[in-house]
Amino acid sequence: MTITKQNIETVNRILNKFKKEHSKVEVFYNVCFCILIPQTRFKTVLKTVDWLKRLDFFCKPVSAIALAISHEYFKVRYRNRKAFYLLEMKDKFDKIYEILTSTMTPDDKRQWLMINIKGLGYKTSSHLLRNLGYQEFAIIDTHIKKFMKLDDKKWNYLKVEQKFRKIATKHNLSPAQLDAIIWQNQAGVTEEEFQY
Image 1 (tube, rainbow, N blue to C red):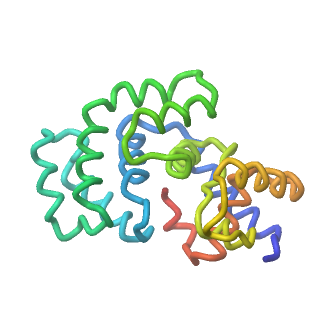
Image 2: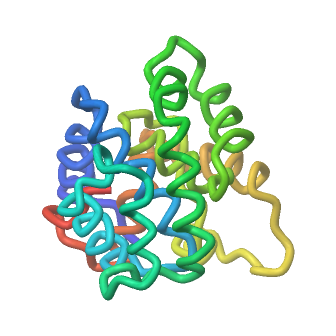
């Protein structure tokens, strides 16, 4: 894969959108997206989050969202489990928001997210922080494993992340920039679709 000036300009525009100040509601739906994304297509999760917004999940009583489990737009994999995770996250969102807007380091925030939000691991916590403007992390997933020619059976997230950071530095890019270039190149997602 060749990294061009145009690639860099495109991902900079995308990542600059993530750097803007986010409302509490925007942060909430970003967390929803990151809970829903594992093992589900990006565009499917976009539709599901759009539906949650139309349902006004942020404001409606928790009981209302239970309908999501059987709704036609709630087609994510492991939907029953993920619906439970969304409900639990909603109950403690004030604390989550407090942590995300605190002066904690990005690494400490990621650690806190993994410990305190069911459904979030290294990958999805990194994804959430990237969506909130942090560029220290890449979202280590299939696209990066393919780019780095990794054996799916034998790899360690933090070791891969460390190697990926070195590759990004070599290209004078942040991990988030290189990640976005690779993902956009492999997934064929337009700049407009790159919302999360």
